[in-house]
Length: 122
Image (cartoon, rainbow, N blue to C red; front, side):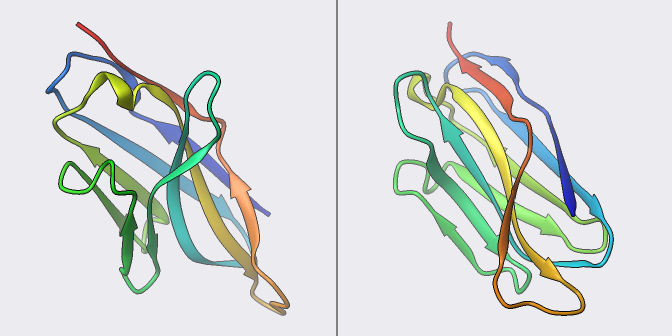
């Protein structure tokens, strides 16, 4: 099992910045990738950014050039640096990890954090 704990959300003005953190804990699991998703009221949950254990990253077009995902494998922690925030970035942001057992990995399993609210408003 993998537990994910997010932090860093809050209220920020348009053009401001926030950094989200996601700490993963557990035993007997290896994490292949971590990512950040967001869900705004009335909308589907969508991928914001993801990063593999090899530091390969992928971003949604809406955040390219503004957001940066990073990962500290030693600490099992992922970060999302959000700059030039816009009102449309307002959502609950969820951390995701794709992981499997250290003993056998027939498939990767998705784990989710509880979410952290990001509100961009003047």
